[in-house]
Structures are given as structure tokens and as C-alpha cells.
Length: 168
Image (cartoon, rainbow, N blue to C red):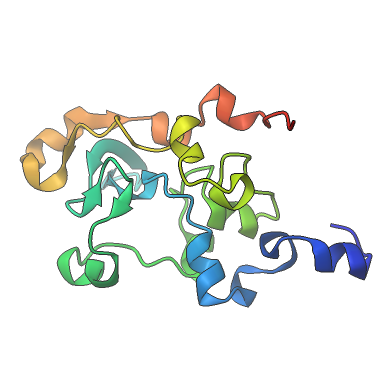
């Protein structure tokens, strides 16, 4: 980051603020709407390793990739993780594209993030979201079938999502 105060002041909030400095509105806007963190994750009891599944939380709207009851999510899904600056630092399963993770790591948001593109659909167009990739919601499958739905793609970015789109 540049030390020039004029350059810093003109930079978007996610480039000049820490997670702790964000307003509530800025915090919420950092979510790119990919839905990857709303996929069920399995933890190995022995190694504590985390594995993603292609099973969505019971509250996930798998087309819009948003929670269907965000304000009351923890009442309906007690193990839903509420992101805070502390949890962002502690969770090793946040997707590599997560806006909270990127800001914490001092990195910029990707071209498809709605704060950069100005369009909430670019996360879907770039293939980053879970749209079309969710096999079922967690209340639609028996628990013993979850292991058959382990996937690696939530921890990867599609090739075109990494490269910056040319402007103009």
C-alpha cells in the first residue's frame, strides 16, 4: 500500500481499513455471495482435517447463493459460524476467494467481486459461486450419505476467476 495520504484516502475501504475498522455495512458488503462457506464441511475426528461437501446448509438458497434467513440463521442452524475478525483469522476452511480472508491477508478483491465489478452476478458468471453445484441441502440427505459428497472444488478457483478481466 502507498504511504501517500491522498492515494490512501482515494482507495476503496477494503484497501485502507482493517477488518476491525469496517462499519457494519462495509463488513456485510465484503461477502461476495459465493455460498462456499454455506456448504457442509466434515471434520476428521482423528486428524481434525476439514473436507468440503457439495451439500448446502438447510438455509442456503442455492440459486442466489445467499442465506434464506440470515438475521435468524443461528437460531435455526446452531452450528452456523458467525464471522468476526477473530473467526476469520482462526478458520482455515474459508475459501481462497473469501473477501474477509483477502482483506485480512492484505490482498485485493478479485475482479468478479461485486464491490469491484458493481454487479452481484459476476461471482456467478466467473464460476466462483455454488450456483448449479449443490447436490442437495443438508436436510434432504441422511447423515451417512454426506461422505459420498466430499469435493475439493470449494478450495479452488476456476482458471478464469483468477485472471483480471481486461477493462475497456
